[in-house]
Image (cartoon, rainbow, N blue to C red; front, side):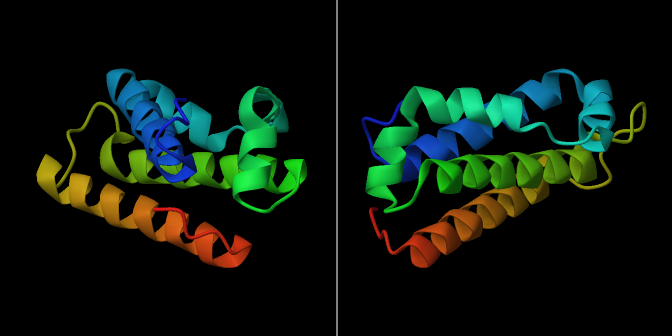
Length: 121
């Protein structure tokens, strides 16, 4: 994740990359969605740039960890709703899911910014 454009852009990039990966392997989406979330992956992400994000978000390292885990769960749920019913095709046009994804992720990120007091745009 590239944070040079700010934490918000980094979160959007992470969400988009996760969605793209799940789209490449739609059969894995249901598996990923039904396995308990492990903090291990988020810890690795938080360890890489958690101190930068903790400072920017005026949060703790644990707050950053929980933020990434929450974003992960949101993206997986959206992916499951879109293409997790393999082998069946999505029931709506891709543009519908793209708009839904954008609204959901932007609302999530705006909520984190408001909750943590950081309005970095």
